[in-house]
Length: 403
Picture 1 (tube, rainbow, N blue to C red):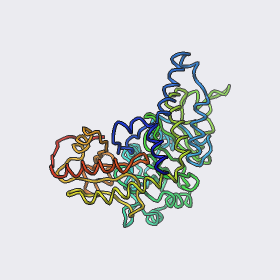
Picture 2: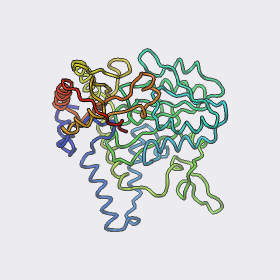
Picture 3: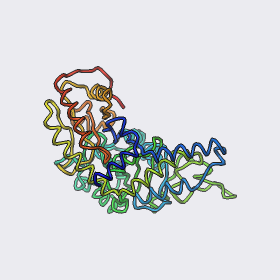
Picture 4: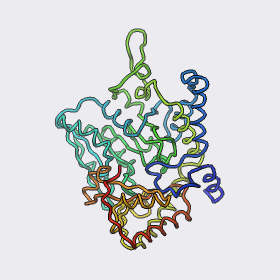
């Protein structure tokens, strides 16, 4: 990805001219073509009738692009309104939990997933945390030592929301597949940032949101379900699409769309299809290289700011584009708000996002910069200049932690 490529990509992304955006892990900036795809579908619905403007080709484009992203088959992909909605649907479809059954998770598990698991714990299941290695990543060898006949699920957040760690998802998958244990991956921060091959990961379920590094619209998400695992999942919610009437009975579909409903926003899916196709044309490896180059350099430069402490996990030079830090004298939410007034967007996470990891590390909140291939060195210079200035005038805020 050379300078000409970057200039072209930024020129067709309207937000790049308005803000210095370092919150791609929250939601990235869509291209004008993605915006146009949403608007054009809405116009067709407004002018010709919403039902009459329904076009199966929109969903086909999105499904084919998602399958190419994941190295999966289109029939193994379902769409949802959010990553959390997709994950909870798949988890609840596992069926009732029995006392003594075990769920093994990484310490960095996303809180929304843990909230679903809490219902299983109420039924008597045990939630257990897999030990970390010396770099703070989930340890596959430690996981292997935990396996017994009571383990019913292994769940992993591949890239945690509160720092730069990249968990060894494929190695965890090897342990899960070897023992025949269902394996769920939360790839919310990975999709659009890292190459993602579900065959290599050996996962049974993987989900991610469209709005993050994929640069799709809010309100979109995708879920992969391994074909051989699908029959073990019985969705709680069903309708005429997911369980159609065959003349005698209502029968669940034999593809991933058993997790979809007949009511869907084609406008949002049209935007997602365009965003996915743009990502696939750029190529996941080229994107990964640029994000790694920018974020590795930024981490080093952040160390020069007085009072700033990096709060990342993971081996050096093997981290994601998410950079967590705290700044002495600043509440992270107040820091985020102050930078926003200067048109610089960052994130701020509290304990509620990743409670197991934040509590284990004694952190109450962190500021988070997340870098995309769209960012430039000039933008990074502006961010650093502002952080350096704010470091010299601490301002404690009583703001509550932001979601």
